[in-house]
Length: 415
Image 1: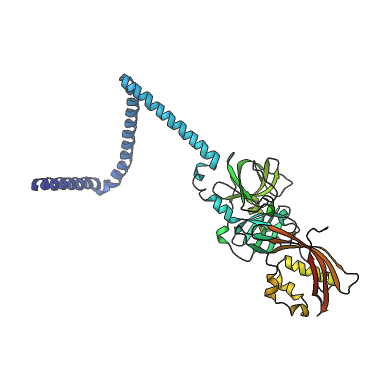
Image 2 (image 1 turned 180 degrees about the vertical axis):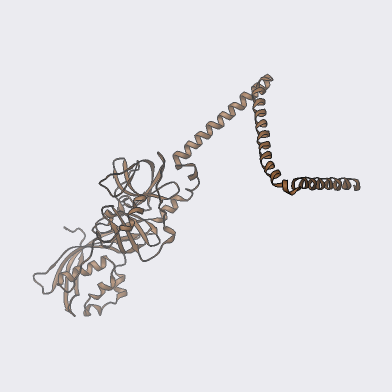
């Protein structure tokens, strides 16, 4: 045992002495050290490359000669060639599958949980004149098509869990067919990322998300898959489009078009036959700075003008969920029977009111005959209700106020 230890120590000592001698020869004399270092930096890499090349050539030569040494070697070579060709063919098949189903090889794993993310982030946009889809691009901002909210001053955002939010601000561009809806509450977990610069491969798979048929088709959002076909531009349009073979239907407008990783590349816009067009996210990024409320529908109300205007104003306040304003045009007599909390709770499920007619009653003083309909949200789908009757009004503090009502729901209205 002692002899083994002495041998090990001797070998270590010899190695250390050898290294010391090598360093001494390299460094001294000092004036030659830079030249030696430069030579070594050139010599050793070249030596490694030469030896590697020779080794590769030997392997290639042995490989070529191997099958001809014996019948057994020849059969082995045939077997290995067949296995290699099979593996190469499998690789190309897998690569083609990844390209067709995920767009590119780097997108293979990033779609894990994508459907759940889309179901959580895409919302319904409901108004009195139209319904569509939208998606969060910021904590409190939803992007949709302008034609979804055109003529509608107070659309509602219905979240995937069935709750709805009031839109407090709208800006957009009707020519570009895009609008941004702002709400008071923030939802950072629902935000989808827009691709800064859209770049898609031929036939890259894409996913469109929306609510076909609007609230007439209850349930979760619809997720459709298709493939990129082409980019479309026209001098008559402010925006660029992506064309796919996805079939868009009414109600899906304003929803997102995403790649396999969930990045938004476009906005559902138009479906014709088996082809659909989507505004590119490039167009949104380019135009969003010019969005304004210029084309957005405005509400003009004046309860002091006439009893008819006061009745119309009250129902518009209900439509816009401006409950404080609506409560202010109730008469002192009416207020003896309610308070703002009780009165507001009567209308918690109303998401839209459409005043069909509001005119002065010919036989009763300060009385208004009114017809209207409401959209009520039950957490899953819309219920439609129709009403008609009269409101007796009274002038208080220069404003016509609601005093007594005789409103009845109509099951099968002629209007």
